[in-house]
Image (tube, rainbow, N blue to C red; front, side, top):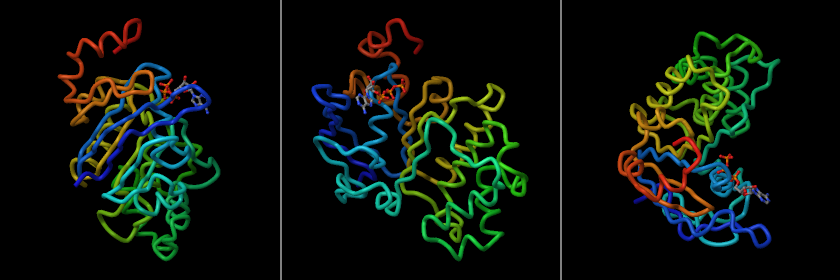
Length: 247
Ligand SMILES: Nc1ncnc2c1ncn2[C@@H]1O[C@H](COP(=O)(O)OP(=O)(O)OP(=O)(O)O)[C@@H](O)[C@H]1O
């Protein structure tokens, strides 16, 4: 059964169809990249999936259950974890405190008091050595890793715990070129080693090609093409959609 299943998912604001009849099924452990020209509706799609925006049509299923009208915190409890395009860390808190806070916010209070559990989560994103440092001193790449650790935090106790579905919105945004490879490696490990299901918006094609099982191309709110990276890149309709933009 698909972890995530979208049927006719739509979101209109006034007369503007911003997400328009999207059908997509994402399998267990699959990595699907969402690409598309600026304004195609990628972030809006993620807002619908995380519950920040309410669809005006269609359904969203997680492990077969209809979550279309659940608020964001109830989706999070069911295992939908999301990172945002702009980095969201608190400069005056330590790296470890962020993870403990995320665990507490998710109701895993006891686990949050366990320093070893916090450390273990940080090791999974290769940030264990920065546990006691203030977030203010982290590079952009390390801030992104910390956000991933916060997604994994709700199940601190379990070695492989974490969300059923990770929604990553442009994780490479603002990250220095020399850190992209390292961050890609962390995301790859969460997917391949831990078997996590990932949906990721990303503009960097070189990053996607090494990660994604399938690529979904959005254009004017619709899904223009879904397939292997090679098939999608060779699709004339996709090339047409990107005229004037870098693919
Ligand atoms: N709340 C809103 N009300 C009206 N229009 C909106 C709203 N949110 C987004 N839009 C419009 O919907 C379209 C899609 O926006 P969205 O941010 O989802 O695109 P995107 O594919 O993520 O783009 P980018 O790659 O630039 O981040 C844009 O034209 C945007 O202006």
